[in-house]
Image (cartoon, rainbow, N blue to C red):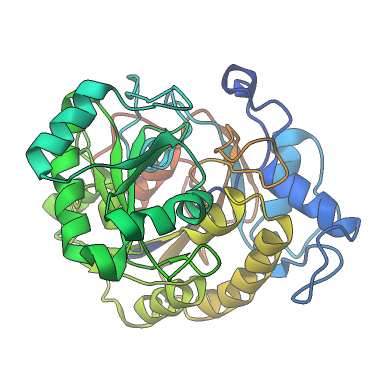
Length: 413
């Protein structure tokens, strides 16, 4: 029987500080729990939403119960006995970081067991010799920034100066990343992409995980706005991904929606679809669930939870986006085929109630739905790689080097 896998990854949707969170300065972080608490206490009310967090379809897959197992606390407003249709687990990260690349690679069987390179200084973040090499090789006349910054704040602060000089804005964060912001029209999108490619090549020996192009539009600090034409330049995975095994052994299709292809440096991706907003990501995902052929793996990263609400520390916005997603999850569930396996998970936390603006080291939910899967708690996973190993088992692929299978279907011994 032909099978499909649908992975819905809610970027940054952690469910509580993991046991090693103290090592990352993240003790007390709980993305879901603190959003639910704020909503329950009417602290996340807005023109768009109010009251307790309402996620009936996520709850039916086991979200609240997964969080309860991870933290010993049920998120406020959630049901202790929901109408459970899914099997659920929670997972800790084996990789030595809390970034997008590490989380995604690990769940496809390639944990990051080495240290990425980082730019740890808050100001004058990038080494002078690196900046000098960038100027020399790219022929830019200068640069702005060179610091840790929020992406939306730095274009407010330096966007007008950028328009005057056309100097690109360089900035970083606690992640292994070099970000470049330029005006999409005045600097030019192709020029930005070419600059990022050059910088990526220069930084590769330093094990910097990503260079990210961050185009924006607008005329002044009051109306500068990032566009949907972000592009990530990522290091290629150092070992074989589940995607590659699926293609080699089953001639499968691997369908990337959103930034998935960029995260995996386009390794093992056979089709890719871009989308600019949360609504568009949901629309494209639903379209692929309806139309993708059998023997496909559909993988969507819902980036806006992280970029628009987690990093921006916007609790109400995060809650509203979750509630919107839940309504679209209903449509996706209704359009699954007879032998589809649905997986809902995250890659790290980014608690919008927590200090700073960076990611948080948290457990992630691992929620499964298949018509022949008994609703039950599947335990604690010691690695996100259990997701990939479970997919390999479901698709009849060779086992991955990391992870354990979590799934036991009705009728199986």
